[in-house]
Amino acid sequence: MSAPVTPTRSAPVTPDPPAAKRAADSYVTGPLRLEDADGRAVGSYTTWLVSTQAPCIDATRPATWLQGLPCHPKHNFARERWTLRVPTAMQTTVPKVLAENLADVANLQTTSVSESKFTCRFFTPTLQWVDTVEVRCTISKDDPELVICDSRSMSAALLPASFPCACPASMLLFTCCFLDMGKNLDHLNFLKLTLAKAGISIDRKKSLVLSPGFSGVEAGSKVSLRFCADADMMVR
Image 1: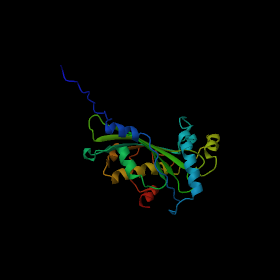
Image 2: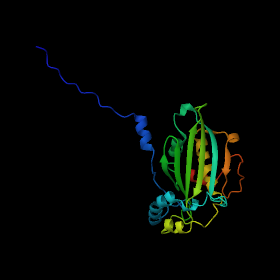
Image 3: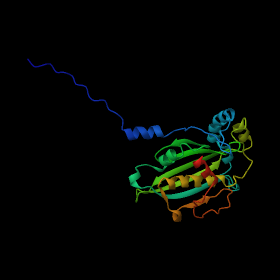
């Protein structure tokens, strides 16, 4: 007579941690801390109004609806192409470096982080106009340390997020053109400074300003690492 067979339980299959983390990191909305031009905290009502309206303004972006037309001056939009070198020893990606180093910056809210993309919102200290920033990264096939980034910053709406009904009102006024006074290019410069401080080098000879906004910088010129007003946020 044969001995009874005892059923065995197979070990539970756990998902690959890196893959699970990548999926969890795809859509992240960070905390929002607003400060005025003097570094003082913005009132609770204004913060509530901004935090409520900013996602709608960011999702619709009425100020960008006419940018595809040849006649549009694109004075509220900036775009740069960066060539970065990310040391393999860092074992990280450009979007994660940005998210980690910008987590505590006032007037900036991270909205998504993935292996190849980083997005955030900048809020002006005065009245909290919303500017949306996107950084899309591609790793070179020939050199795994070489990363090409298509970086864009755009003014999202004519009216600031602290203005009641700013999103629908900006939709009605989407034909109104306005100037960004160089702020969108400043946002991109701020992100470059953040990467440089984190140990990621930028090849300025291979990095270009594709669209300068209303900043006085010529399209096609080399990118700059000059001081910008946004850098004040890093020391507050």
